Image (cartoon, rainbow, N blue to C red; front, side, top):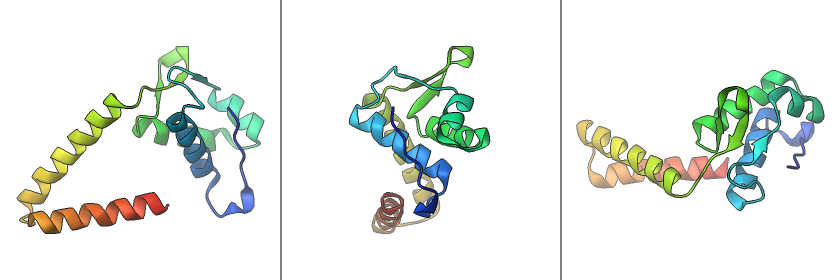
Amino acid sequence: MTLKIHIDDGAAPYEQVRAQIAEQARSGALPVGYRLPTVRGLAESLGLAANTVAKAYRALETDGVIETRGRNGTFVAASGPAAHREAAGAADAYAERALRLGLTEEEATAAVREALRAAYRA
């Protein structure tokens, strides 16, 4: 695993760690089941505070990119079908909420499109 943190990049260091690990997991450079370094170990090797790496790991875990197995460590999680199922569940929940709010299908779709544009630009 190779990570490069650019302090003058403008992006927060934890976001750089999160984005780089996520991209390497998606591309297959970090295969499913790959054991990630400990929070302290990665923080030390990157010259970052442990809390910065811990924040990135928490975000990655929330996104389903990695999974922590207690004392056994942190690993790249399976993507693909599991990620698709989770996305489908989130989409179902959103559709139900939009309907309860009284949005039309077009309004709900427009809100999703705008959220996706904003997320993928970041």
